[in-house]
Amino acid sequence: MTGTPNDPEFERSNCLLCGGSSPIAVGEHGQFNLPTHVVVCERCGFSYLDPRWSKERYAAFYVHQYDTLYRPEIAAQDDLRTRYAPVKQIIERLKERQLLREPERVLDLGSGMGHALIYLRENQWPNCRYEAIEPSSECIKHLRSNGIELVASDVYSNWEESREGRYDLIIMRHVLEHFHDPLLVLRKVRQVLAKDGLLYLAVPDAMHPTKPLHGHFFRGVHISYFTKYSLRSMCEAAGLAIESIHEGDQHARNEVFTFCRPGLVRDLVPDSSLAKVQLQVYRRMGRPDPLLATRRALARMARKLGVIQ
Image: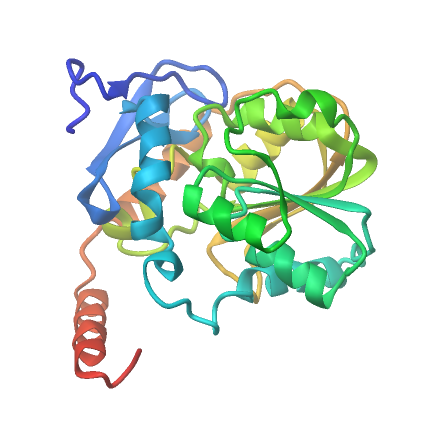
């Protein structure tokens, strides 16, 4: 699983933002030592995987392996301290910008276990209708057992065709970076968003990545690495108007999040200077950090000894 040209599980890709074909290689492995071929587009500065797993390989990974690695609450006891933290963060951000209003229908795209929707139903809007898109079989069972309607298990199916203008609020938290074709997904979202509907979208921030870069931030399941610039550009190319966009806040420092409404399609104007800036960030953040390594080693030891959980 190295991603060599002869490996049938991998495929090549042009830039997912501008279509450019001049990538600058950054790394080959990421978290859990999975093949993670991060490149930076020389034309617009967008980061993505090239080569990457095929769509079929990703589909199998999400059904059979993703939960074990990235959703430990499924493989082990759920941590009640963190289960609802992400949705509480979303609510606070909506309140802070005076965007919190009761919707009739909410769609959570990439909902996982559905914790966000369950919390909203039980604590915020009990009369709202909640729907989800999620590929994991275990998560789907949990969604259905909690009365959450499953719209689709495959985001690339034609689920949007019968739902035009249906949703008043769509949540996409740390999911856009997983898609083979994020622009296509955003166009589907634009189609099903109500005329005055709101999209909440959050992704990891490639301009402020977490350390260690190759052992944590770069991930084989993250096909795209967004910045404030590239997220805005992709949303506008999909016909989504940016109401506001932010590089982190007191709730989370290392993500870009935005609030979007239906708008007009805007063409991307590539800025080649962004490639140099992105590469500088990766080079700086990719240097060894002995202090961080020591802290992580001590934390692992403390967990083994039962000092911390």
